[in-house]
Amino acid sequence: MEVPVVFRFELVLSLALAMTIATAAQAPAPAPSPSLSPAPAPAPAFANITQVLINAGDYATLVGYLTSTGVGEKFQAQANRTDVGITIFAPKNKAFTTNPAASLLKGISFRNLEALLEYHALNNWESLADLQQMTDNVTSTFATYNSGGRYQLNITNVQGQVQVDTEWNRATIASTLYNAQPVSIFALDEVLLPTDIFGLPAPAPAPAPSSGAPTPGPSSSSSPSSSSAGGAASGPSGGNSFATHSSSPATVFSLLLLALLMKIIA
Ligand SMILES: *[C@@H]1O[C@H](CO)[C@@H](O)[C@H](O)[C@H]1NC(C)=O
Ligand SMILES: *[C@@H]1O[C@H](CO)[C@@H](O)[C@H](O)[C@H]1NC(C)=O
Ligand SMILES: *[C@@H]1O[C@H](CO)[C@@H](O)[C@H](O)[C@H]1NC(C)=O
Ligand SMILES: *[C@@H]1O[C@H](CO)[C@@H](O)[C@H](O)[C@H]1NC(C)=O
Image 1 (tube, helix red, strand yellow):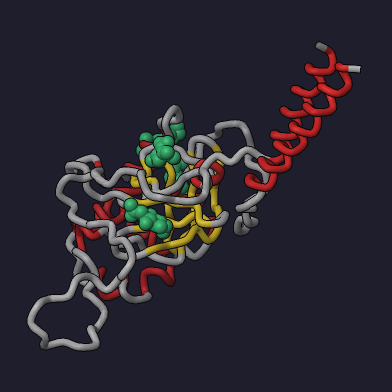
Image 2 (spheres, protein in one colour):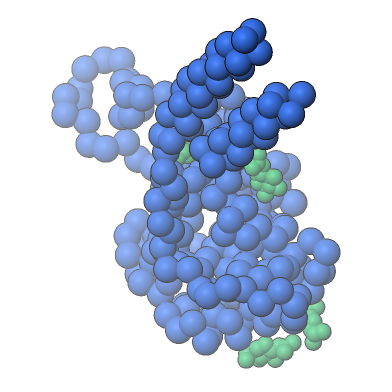
């Protein structure tokens, strides 16, 4: 008589717990990501970055810059290091002819163009799935190497969409051009603009000028306190309410079922 009562109590308790956890975990349903290419081939075959971009179409400007600066060659050398690989953000043709990039790129020095291009790659292979795990990841780029920790990008999954932020602008991955170890190439509708070259964007025309003290930045919300000086200073601490690794309800249920089974057997 005693055993069933205890068992029933535990069952109710477990069910209540399960429902609580399942409810909590069901919050941010991962939105369907943009047009992914079909299942990537597992074999780490040689990936010719230039050829991938040419085949994808719409990247003639990027290919031209990569070739004329020699940065394409550096990217390929990195891609050839199959143990680390490379992740490339590829702006489409139109991105280069759209402002503010178009006007900022006018008359850019060779050295800065080089850095700008190198800003569009990470020194390691990250799959789309890897990027989708990132939250506020202020990370080094290919351009960071010789620049004392500057040229950082902030990568964040915003409801299934991977956002790449500079302090100047923000781009969303539009599609996947290549996604197989050790190379991934993602399409962007914008050129990533490093503040290390262009400084911070001019503040939007203020409504009431002429008053004495200069007003702070236009964004009322938490500013990321720019200053490229210390590099990497901005920690990931952010009060983000979305858990990065939320266990799925299915997993929670399986675990609880297992626990229940063990209780019954014991
Ligand atoms: C990669 O593709 C480009 C464009 O077709 C070609 O010029 C280059 O020779 C290729 N590189 C290698 C290593 O195959
Ligand atoms: C990359 O590897 C390919 C194939 O082995 C080779 O032909 C090419 O020269 C290499 N490119 C660089 C830049 O290392
Ligand atoms: C941040 O991005 C880098 C890639 O540049 C990756 O190696 C690292 O694991 C990421 N960190 C987190 C917490 O996602
Ligand atoms: C990183 O980007 C996300 C998404 O755009 C933004 O919410 C966050 O404030 C940024 N973090 C930093 C440190 O810039």
